[in-house]
Length: 523
Ligand code: SER
Ligand code: ZN
Image 1 (cartoon, helix red, strand yellow):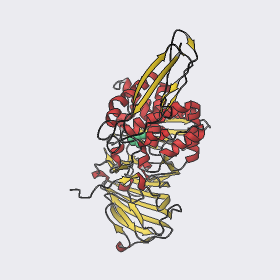
Image 2 (cartoon, rainbow, N blue to C red; image 1 turned 90 degrees about the horizontal axis):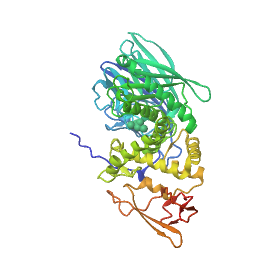
Image 3 (cartoon, rainbow, N blue to C red; image 1 turned 180 degrees about the horizontal axis):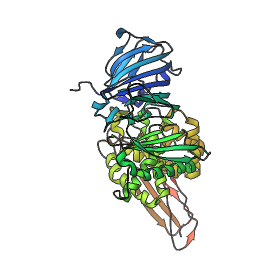
Image 4 (cartoon, rainbow, N blue to C red; image 1 turned 60 degrees about the horizontal axis):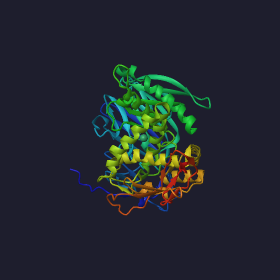
């Protein structure tokens, strides 16, 4: 029985981490009956933290701790405290190297978080808080580090050993074992860590980026699925080109990998350079898959690829900001699908999902803003509101600014925050700074839950030739939120008539609305 009380985590109580981690050196020894993880962290006091002499508190979950060493010296049991959810070392220097060795049982991990086995293959899922099931670590997205990962396993059971970044070393070991070392030069949060080890076949291709770099593309699947990855590979190349053309974003590593796994909690995951997919979201053949399945694969492959910039290079400061990466990336993938397919069909699909499922969420007991103010369990917040409404909020910024200013805003956002863990407010600020538009009122979209209702009435004064349109906005109460303020909303208007001449437009709710002035109206 679980006896621990769930704790409420509040955005208002956010504090910068007391310690930062610059590099993470991992060594995985994979066996049939378990896995040993050696982790060496270079840690330093965060100059931005006001907590002087804070204890070092690392997150952990269901770990068997074998060893802790500080600057190479093994600590005795009394030198640290292990509480089941944390490893606490009361006294640490301002800068030090910490080694932690843990023992895991991936074969018995049915939560599919952290390191687990699926059909004999070792695989990880670390978003949102799975890395703590692998080793003790400050498992929060604002701790960004450079990772080097060495994987050792039996060569015949696991001929393929993958992790994030570029492969820098490999070789044979005793007893039929072998190793591969991966190095990821880009600092990343722990939720983007990934490892895959198994007997997989690969489909290979290349993509030449806009600056002329050749990227090695690989999709790894179980041998029985070898013929089913062509569509995913084509989709990937289309997505890579589109992100260059529409957002000016070039791929950064030398290799990009996708792995298909049968047992996977989410649809897919954007781990740096090593996306892991539920098989159903990547495999398709003309004989068995429908058009819809082909489109779905294309959009999920694109979504995960686009995260390389919107999520990985610029990541979330904390999990309250989940929509920063998900809302923006869903907006990016639906624009991509509209561009490569039918914009009308895609828009109808988006709007139908929003109206049938997200509006219902917004009207029910689970209603929450796209940037929630508190949560107990972050895994419950991978919702339609965060993803789909979050994407519509970004779409509204796009509508208000227009494509050129929006692109200026996204360029500024990526340049200003490259390598940082930021907030939705930083995103809106970049859009404001690049466009010169005031989005103060617009920010309420991030804070208030519920679907706004617009009441529109109009009158036409034929004598004066004046058409008056009155728009009232109300937002229903939602759990914990009443008396909401009206939200800045784009409102497109066009008037058609037999005789055309310039018109005057009166907006009574002018602070909330930005209307496109119609060029003509009924006379
Ligand atoms: N981060 C993952 C995704 O949205 C989780 O679903 O792609
Ligand atoms: Zn996503």
